[in-house]
Length: 126
Image 1 (cartoon, helix red, strand yellow):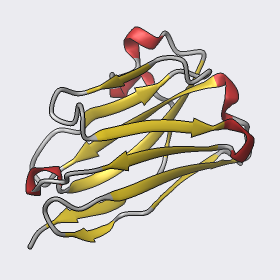
Image 2 (cartoon, one colour):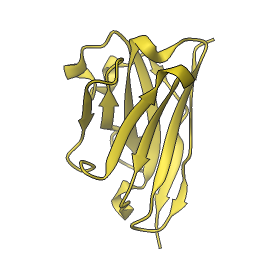
Image 3 (cartoon, helix red, strand yellow):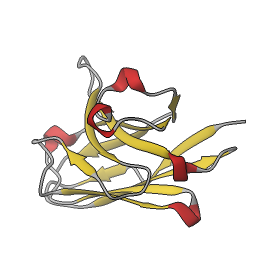
Image 4 (cartoon, helix red, strand yellow):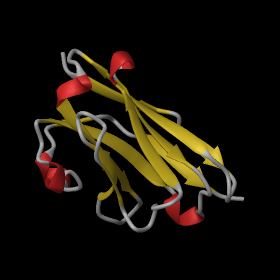
């Protein structure tokens, strides 16, 4: 059974940090591009960051560039999103998604992904 599970969300003050994890089970991630997406109440799900299967290519949305870092540990079958200098506007449910052999230029497009986690809530508030 193919599953992705996010963890690491929570409540943090503005300026704080969180590290999200996306752990895969039922398949190995090393041939999959991984995307992180987020969805705030009343808004569309948007692409935040993505990483190629090898880890050699990464993408960041302008809104998170310089603050978020995506990485992967294929030996642990896990992808991470380190989020620093968090802002209230980063508040959302964060999802990871996986797609086999995805062209990297498509990695930020949510409709390109077949496998999704259930999401983890990130709330940035004082």
